[in-house]
Amino acid sequence: MGKEKPNPIRLVLKTSDMVKNGIKKLNFRPAKFNNFTVGGKDEISIVTSTGDFLVTWNFKRIKHGLRPDYRIMKLMTTPVDN
Image (cartoon, rainbow, N blue to C red; front, top):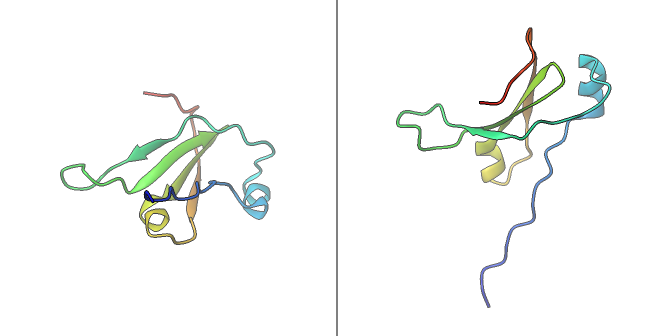
């Protein structure tokens, strides 16, 4: 048989983190891969925004089957796609 596809991993925020940061509703923008490595060949994070917050997941952990962890940062300006 062929190679099985891995189950997708749903990236979510913990309710406790939403409360701590005052996030009442999630409205994620389309996510992008960030690759800030030398040569820009390795994706190291997945970045999106919701409202005034930037959310960054550690893609290396996700690739290795580890529990996704993330950082939330309050933005001073509204994020835009580019």
